[in-house]
Length: 119
Image 1 (cartoon, one colour):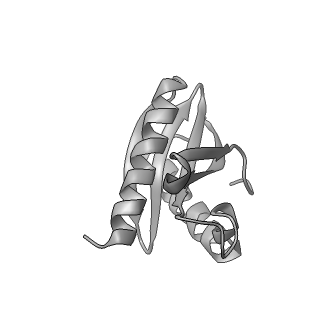
Image 2 (image 1 turned 90 degrees about the vertical axis):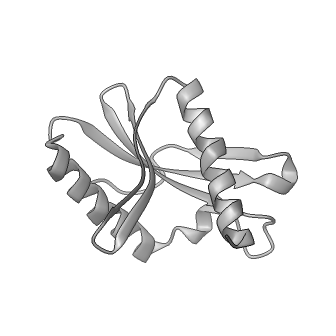
């Protein structure tokens, strides 16, 4: 496993613990469909939260959330649509969250609800 992979997994673990403490129910982790992957999918009340986790060792090249550009957003939206269709979850609200994790800053977490777009 590369350092980047370890950093990413540790970031996902941090965010997973955070959302569970908030009372969210984890539906899927590393959900893959087609060319896309969603790091975490959780139920927050009646809302499905599709969560993109970005762990960064520093902000030299911008914040972690800035790495979720237009193309990444479109991939996440398409993958989320497949998840909803496969699970027949059409009656639920949905949102896209981005979680920034900075391990070298004591695992600082910046959780951004409704970070972009809608289905």
